[in-house]
Amino acid sequence: MSWLLTETEFAEAAAAVKTGEVTRALYAFIGRLVSAHLRSGVVSPTLSGSGSWSDEAVADATHDWLSEKLLTGSLLLAFDRTTTPQALARYLERALRNWLRDRARTRSWPRILLRSRQILERDNGRFTPFDDQPNWMERRWGLDGWTRPQRVEDELAVIRAVYGGPDLEIIRESGARAAAILSTPDLERLLENVLETVDGTITLAQLDRAFRHRFAWAFEAAAVELDEAAEEETQLEEVASEALAREAALAMLADLTKRQLEMLRDRAEGATLERLAEIHGCSRGTADNELKRAAATIRRYLANDEIQERALEILLTLSFSERG
View 1: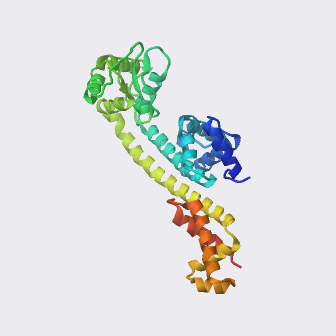
View 2: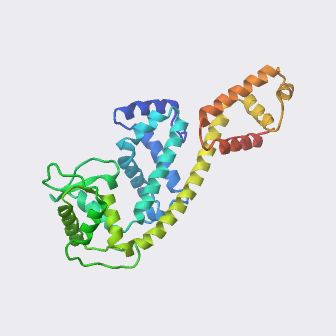
View 3: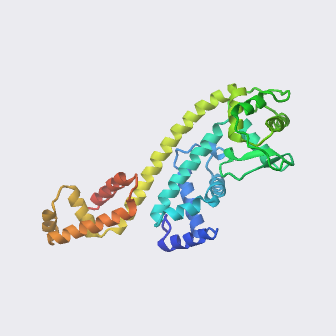
């Protein structure tokens, strides 16, 4: 079985995605893609929640990526922007890196923001979302029972409301990840009081900025972790790009004829068209046509792609290894 989708599987998956379905072949491919990245050695196992990228953790990450991003429109967009299995793989590789990056950044925030999200999203009859933004940080929240509340845009008003909340028992623990800051009942009271004070809908992004003012000490260590996450992301992109380049090179190697591959190899060594014709026993025009066909194959896999140069290097290395 090929690591990529076959042409038939690609066409079937594209048709199914338009109706909101995911074919078995596409789901299996997404699983292979996620597994390859998470087990590449550069994705921190602490992101798994269990401390390692076990089969269960990889399956959970695959499910989360599908439910949070792919099935909310990203998968349909991927098929709208790609026309081959190879192009789809490259598009989804980049989408996965972006999702992992956002996931790493989310981990670095003190728990007060994530716990606020959990409280707001809990169906407890106290809080209500007033729009359906795909980015949870930009979703607007208000109090249950409000009908047409105003949108609060004044950042200072939100900050003042966070400072002017009810009496709170501050919890100070070492380490940003361990910093609870507030008990759950206190945090619930604070969120309710903030909404009552500003008398309008606010976003978690606005709350985040307000929390950073009032609880600055809890965010200091998080800044260091963001730097570590950025370094980890760079390593991930380098490994992923190398894997993509090798995958494209192997696909081109299988698609090019032996003669085209040999001519590309000789051309890379500096042979002119006349010399190619002499080496391969054909006319200059035939040699030129073979190179053009080879170039068309390469463009099909690498048109406007940032991995083009590296993929061609790998292709030529592989072709030289087959010499003789």
